[in-house]
Each structure stands twice: as structure tokens, then as C-alpha cells.
Length: 73
Image 1 (cartoon, helix red, strand yellow):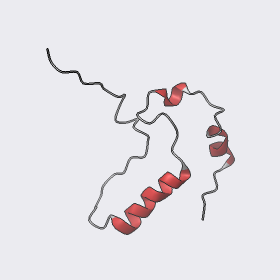
Image 2: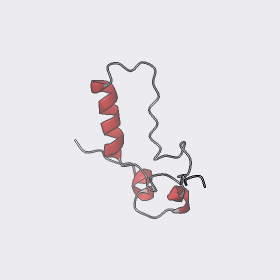
Image 3: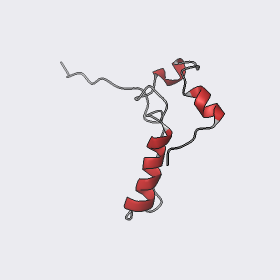
Image 4: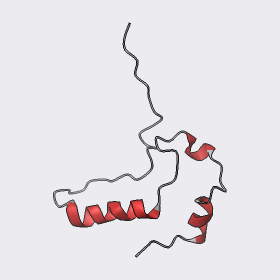
């Protein structure tokens, strides 16, 4: 069954928001409800060996901005 986003989520996901909010993320977009649902399904069905783990679904916000590594001279 497909997710039914609320009006607030639907508005935010139509592109009528400030794109600077997502510009610094590793994945510069909002997650889709189906992506969250897949993670929940994984936790409920397949993550049988996980206890007390935190699954962060924030498109890389907590990971910080991308870093480009260059070889030492």
C-alpha cells in the first residue's frame, strides 16, 4: 500500500521550499515515504541481530558535508 503524505509533507516535496536547506546534504533532497517504509520493514523483518541500534534517515545531514580527500604531496 503506497504511503499517503500529509499536506505539509506534500507541499515540502513539490519543490516549493528553500533548496539551500538540502544543498549541504550528502543526498541533496528529502527522503521519500517509500524509503522510510523500506527501512522500517528492514528493522522489523530482517534486522534480527540488531539490539538498540539507531537508524538515522536524514540524507547525510549528521554525516556532514562531503569531504574531498587529496593525496599528500
